[in-house]
Amino acid sequence: MKLIKSVQTLVSTSTLCAMLAFSNIAFVHAADQDSFFDSPRHHKKSGELRDYMIKRMSKVLALSEQQQVQIKAIKTLAKERHKSLHESLKQFKKEAKLLIQADSFDEQAFIALQGAYQVSFEQVVLVKAKTKHAIFNLLTIEQQLKWQTMEKKRRTRANTERG
Image (cartoon, rainbow, N blue to C red; front, side):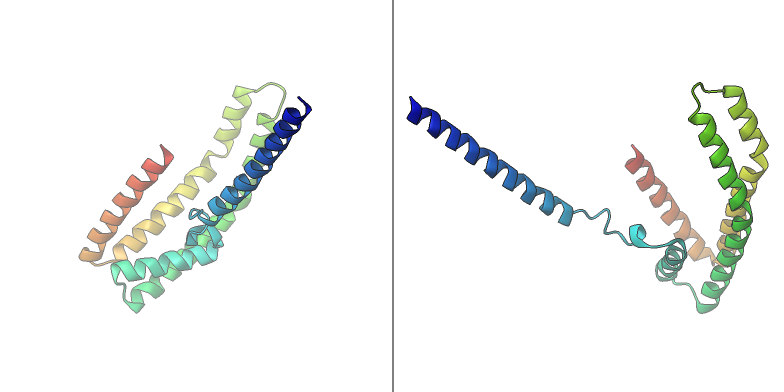
């Protein structure tokens, strides 16, 4: 009886050790294969991402040097406009966080807060729309068609990723 119990203990301990070892190996292998975090987008800062997107546009749309310079200038101007709105949006987030973390949610206060910052929200959307409009109008007709198909594919892919 003692022999059977010691064999059972030995087998269960060995099984447990093997499971722990294989689970760690599987975890390391899964981490190595994680392509989401290896994407160029995930490791770039905003300025680097902007340059990456301009390079990608240049390659796919076959932009001329002049178009590339003009697009960089448009993006830089948009960044400056967005910076001025950034503090306002930051303040909104702080105030919204306080309302969300309160003991009871005050719906009217949140609606009033959002109404107070509505102009800032509109300005951010307006800057984005003006930037896209300016870039779109720099492109030739063929490039515009290509961009539209790229945008459609991007939206489709984004919608499927979101679920």
